Length: 123
Image 1 (cartoon, rainbow, N blue to C red):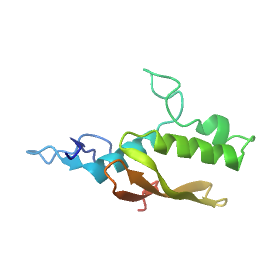
Image 2 (image 1 turned 180 degrees about the vertical axis):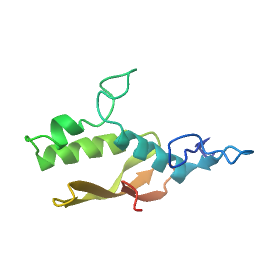
Image 3 (image 1 turned 90 degrees about the vertical axis):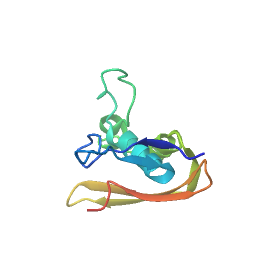
Image 4 (image 1 turned 60 degrees about the vertical axis):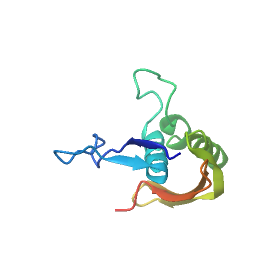
């Protein structure tokens, strides 16, 4: 049985064309869940201040440790509903000049499908 869920648009609102609400299945839903999990900074969500990625504490701070960063991202991704495990190690691309970090990942879903995605998504 396929997982269905509401899809969000680029502004993170429910995708709605004026008549229809967009519904996605499996890969698109899990990709959206991963993207949302990685987009939330720890402490940002008023319902659960411990939810989210501790960007300020462990990734953007002066006490940066690549092993800790990897463990945080692996945990966030593999803890996402619909993800069984990573299919291969996460690839990181850091641009010191632009001060950006991008991830490429492949996840094995509970359906047996492989999801390949980038965070943030490529423009």
